[in-house]
Length: 327
Image (cartoon, rainbow, N blue to C red; front, side, top):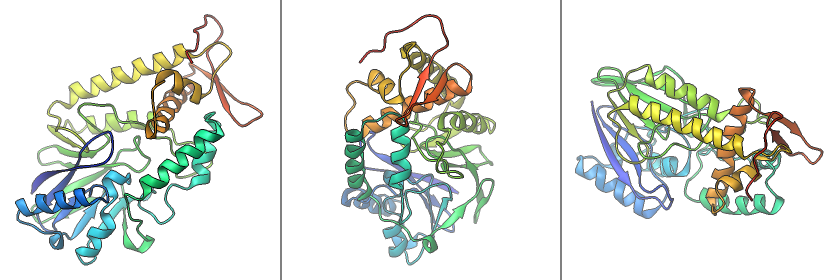
């Protein structure tokens, strides 16, 4: 079973996205890149160098349903004459009714994001959505934890690794402990725990960072020798990266807690203090980061939280000592 990385351009700040051709029957592509002319041309060239065409694809598997990973899924499926598309049921970005606006709006209101900012985020994401064609429910099949993707000469085990998104999945080749991890593991940056409704109860917020820590530990249990991420270079020393991630998460959480004044603050206020220069999509990602760390600190009994009369959540540190909130 050959795993062939193909780098595709994206219009996003993160830069190129890695998709992976599994050159074994049934010919499989893991992730697709965004729906842009440049990404499609680069994909065709990558397939050509490996002596394949889009028409040879029999299966398209998505690590998660962000536009830079799923954008071309429908068009590739159609060109390959109904290649099978698989994605975890907790993902929404590939669906006809993806990113339900009211559910996300409610989460942003609770985070204290001002109305005009929410409207700006909505307009921005309307544009981002153009980078992916939606799939109807009968055009994809569900990935489930521990299922095996069978190939002629081996298999990949599906490992549900929520955190970056609720339905993020990784794929493990146990014969040599190689993992394709999507955006769960990236060499140069710590993945953003994106603010998402809980798939089981959409009125609630998904505990992204707590779940992400579990996912990192689960991948560690395979003692991986090589990890292919969704962006950047492959990782040869997962143990070093694992410990670096843990340090970065704990340091960021300590920073978030320290920023809270005794009078309390919303996640939006913390996000603006952490990332005062954030613009465009990064303002949403900043809120996601702040919410994730505040939620984890609350779960660990480091913070208290209360819901105000206007629907905002305000976080407070225990009594004693006060840090000024930078604005």
